[in-house]
Image 1 (spheres, one colour):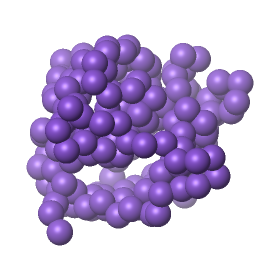
Image 2: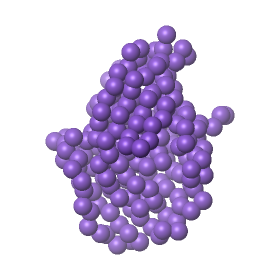
Image 3: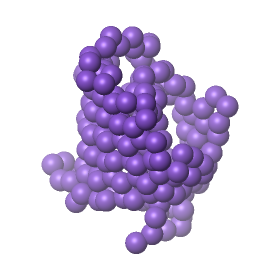
Image 4: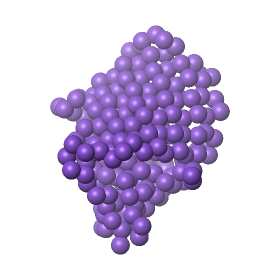
Amino acid sequence: MGRAARPLPSGHDRAGTARLLAGPDPERIDAARVVLGADRLTAHGTSCATDHATAYRLDTGPGWVTRSLEVTTLGDHGARRLELSRDEGGTWAARRWVDGREVDVDLPDLRDALDCDLGLCPLTNTMPVLRGGLLREGGGRSRLTAAWVEVPDLVVRADVQHYGPSVPSPGGGAAVEFGVEGFAATIVVDADGLVVSYPGIAERLRG
């Protein structure tokens, strides 16, 4: 039977874990360093594609709910920067820069959103997987709205997403069904809820 990642005592974190993935479309290499707490995570990472590079920093609060996401991209499109945040009352706010100049941000309706979802970044699938208990036997279905960040332009959109059901893996982790309008995939995660395989998006490199 599959097993869920064991929660840590309050105030204790798993040591920072580095993950390296390769993406096919667009072709790229992603690297992330993640610190997992009992019910939250912090992470920073990079992604290098043929026409742009991305760097980000992510922080969640209790329940794996997004607190802040800071992202920069640089490439053929120019330079972009986004600071996205969610307060304890559930209000989202954002600031965005284009080639060093701050521009107005028109956020969509995110009142029901708990998560950010950074385009082409499998790490941001971890929060819904852990919150939804999808590492456990009998992990069910959930429907949620995410603050999806388009890469490389860093425009924020409301995205309805479906997670589950899931099938736990014998050695820990699970295979999780995921879908949005016009796209579906089975995402394989490890015992910490971190993506190992996301068909069409990224595959973890060995070593």
